[in-house]
Length: 253
Image 1: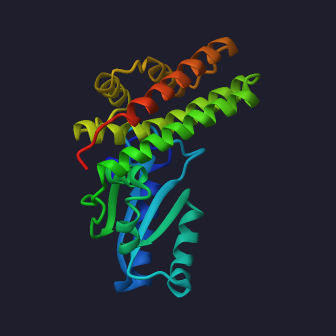
Image 2 (image 1 turned 60 degrees about the horizontal axis):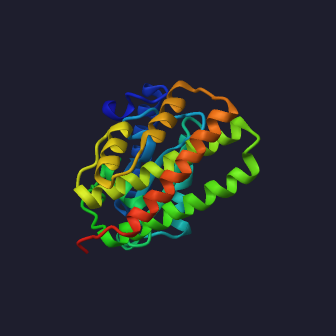
């Protein structure tokens, strides 16, 4: 577990012990019905995990799902949640495979950023269609574009709310950028800054504004309202251009 805990704001010893205890408890409670336990998402990424606002994403793959099986899990999950912030997703193997076409960006992100705690690694070899991924990327980018415009109408007077919208939106944007790069090049850098540089080069887009937002996030700065509006405007333009570019992107599938 050491490699996935290096940047966590949570106490690594506490997290490791809690996850190991949870793994062992679930294995005992579920027996042969438990196939796999993963953690995924921000906690596994190389960047800083925000323990004040984020949760450790836990995924359980089981043979079947009904109230009886969920009852067997409840005590273990509740005990762990008293010690660390958890968000638990429970799937069957059939759920996992059949969800890749409707949630391709989400499962691509899980595929790129996961750690196996128990059982079989069913995630690494998931088949995610490039065309499904492209369509979902386009949809999410256009949704993000629309949300940014709507949010500005209500938050343009508040530095704090504009900044929060930018930080949240940049996180969503990076997930889509990763998926777009996977389609185009088959390679996704680990560092967010490198991801954006690669995305800008491959898709001929100016991504300087994302670098600027990432610096704000790292330094926990709140610029003047004028500067925030300039950044917000540039970011909206980037999202619009990215959505148009992805709309025209060709895939092999």
